[in-house]
Image (cartoon, rainbow, N blue to C red; front, side, top):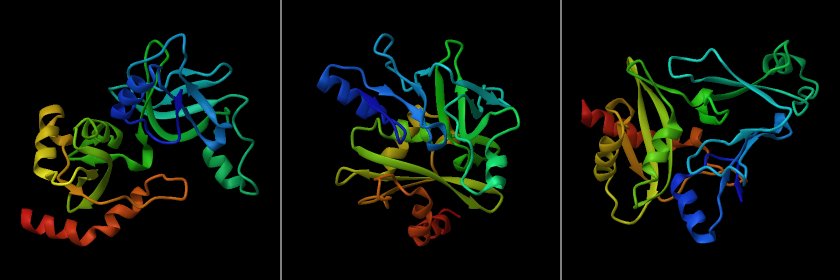
Length: 230
């Protein structure tokens, strides 16, 4: 069994594997990569959320890695598109002269070759000078037994960027309890300033959560909370 198209929820991985007695592999790819880049293997199933092994014939490198080995994932191989239709400028921006495609995703690669997806480059949150990758916070939130689904986004505030977590959860779930849970499992700068419990997420036709709409939809509520906090 394989998962793709969106970050794999660790709680769902555990439940599905327990139900079916089979490993659920995490995979990764993009339309521009036709579409596969990494995938799991039944011969080497993983309990963690690594994306598995780089597919044969495909090269992956991390561009300008930071002190933790995290940088933009670059991909090269016969699976890479020729270019965007009638858009040479976008093609030049996406594909380097050496043939590597800029994925727009932050990742790191373990010594054993396993690729870890850290999040979209454009979704990186910089809180008090520290990099915060939304999937890490989302994965921890979904480990709380009352949380069904979550989306973490950044929101500019004067002199900084705040972390906002939107969650769907069991009736009666309190944001303060969820924040306390995160304080027990994450360093302080990764804990959201606001956790907003909502009924459902705005979604695309494919079912993907439209993160960019969340802050706009709840702007008044977030402004009110910021005012109370000052």
